[in-house]
Length: 339
Image 1 (cartoon, rainbow, N blue to C red):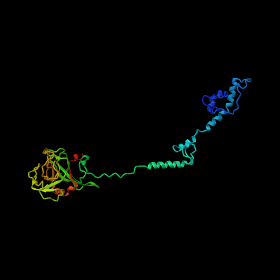
Image 2: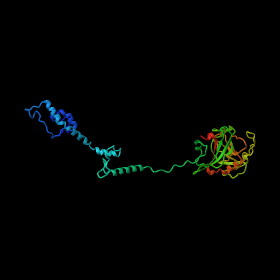
Image 3: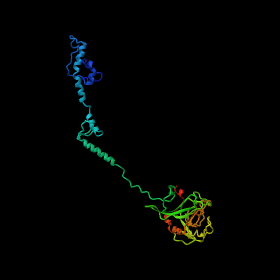
Image 4: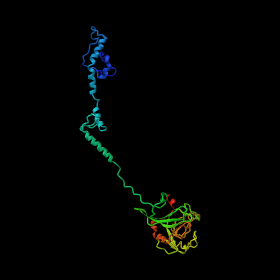
């Protein structure tokens, strides 16, 4: 047994006592090395203490380079395998020989080449990369909306409505406005089908809370279901009631005559029962909230709460409105409609 094999705590031969530290680090003295008889073997020939030290040093000194070279030449167990295994993860250090393409890396099953292992890993990576959720249908394109209407206003337009009369007031307190007709198609969205028509609204502008006599038009989205007038039906698709009840006299706020203003009217479903004549005065929200809000023929001045259009435009409107398309009026000043 060499000193390098001796377990911790074992006693080395007395010859090596003086150099036990070097022996344990450098591999020790081989078992077949020539030994010097100890004083116990030849008591009749005592060896001075200094001579023993010199003799031990003389015997061990030539062995030091050999033991050091042996330790340097013996790589750490598995070192080559670790180097080859790491070759795939990090570049080979300068001066080191690359791993053979036919050598299986550490952990590869016998008979499986390194190249096959790399191909398998690559295939597994590709397979993992290809396992993705199947692409769904493309996101639907955003359809055109009515310009100038904010999300709150658009949300009030019924989903099944395909016609809208948009009345845009010039200002919150202005009595002048414009009216534009829009149609909705499920493919193309909302599209204007008319130019902006000049219009009037109430003398003091617009309000979110209309009251009887406040001279402001109500802001909001309201259905259009019923029509009528003093004159005969011009070809309306909405139910149309003709009668003397639409006669009007007197003057407007600017002194302009009101005669003929109700020759053609479309009732706005503000505080009224849909499906009845515009002349019905039922007020579901109470009389204090006002009513009788119509689209009618313009009399060249502001109204008390209605919206007015030129006579030819009123006839065109009556022919265009279609109850099958659930028409609505969207009305208010431009800032309020943008909410």
